[in-house]
Image (cartoon, rainbow, N blue to C red; front, top):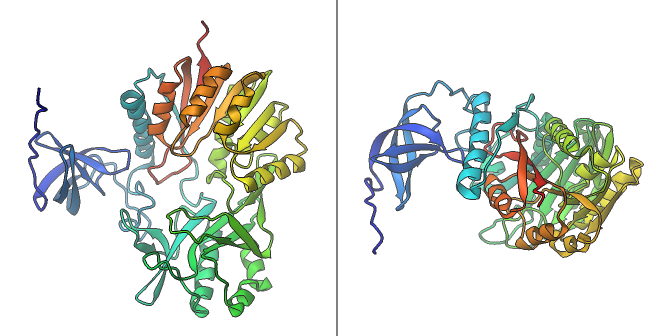
Length: 457
């Protein structure tokens, strides 16, 4: 039987009056027109808009907002002056309680339609600090028409929206960024052109600890050298002291790639790490190491994990452990944890942090999770913690878990789609608890923690 052809009721260029009914996982508004789904970037549920269709597919269309005819009662004024151009914080114009409803809804929808798994009610932990919370800024750098742009990419493009201040970052990060901008302009430092694959400076990454007030500045470059006069000003003791710059490093990335950081990092000034503190724990954080960006919410996430793991008498396997933050949080109460991490510098940071905190119950293995996890199938692993990147867990990892058969799995996810897929693959486990913890206020990004228990035969 031939597939039924669906008639698309609109064409590119058509101008329509639409009502935004809901939001997609991207944060874009969703409208219906004669049963056809239309995405409207910039729209939130309850808006009435006048928009132009710019793209159609058999399943959906996309519009460009021309005018907002009336506003949703859930709309607020975004404080960021470049909010409508920048692709970073897509939810700034939505009331915060509605942001949380949106995020919980995205997780429910993914589990229902992608995972097809039965779920208990989903809890949520909103953030108390919804601005000036982020402890890391990654800035794109471009030179356009002689003007140096430092900021974030415009949505759907590689054009940088330049801004002096970003409202979700710690103020010290904004100040350090502008210090670097002034020096790049003053010394006419070569800026990378991604189309020509020429130039020196590609990105700027700045990390900050609100507890120690230390800053780590990372200049991401191709394999060239900085002008000596630039380095002299960069290392100026008075400027570094004023900005609390603890270290400045150069990260080398000579590849034609959208990946920000390369494998080699050189210290230009001070230290190659900053000291961070969460609760009673001290951490060593390098430029390339993964660490959660909202410290206050990270503590609430770790407290949730610790509550789920508190009665563990066996060993815990912390896959994708990064700098060992979860491992050490559990280890401080005496739990025995083995962390696996692919990034060599993160493993060094984890071991240094374990030593500094006097925690001997945590050990760390360098390598890919899929290369090491099967070694533990004959050992006493009671809990496995999964905190994978956005792509989720490889099939090898899921298979290995079925062989290890831990009593509990704690899955931490930053991507509801791959979370739902992986939960469906963990067939011998029951979902006991799900918590959406807002680590990324004002953005569409979602962090979810899930507790699973083994179904006894």
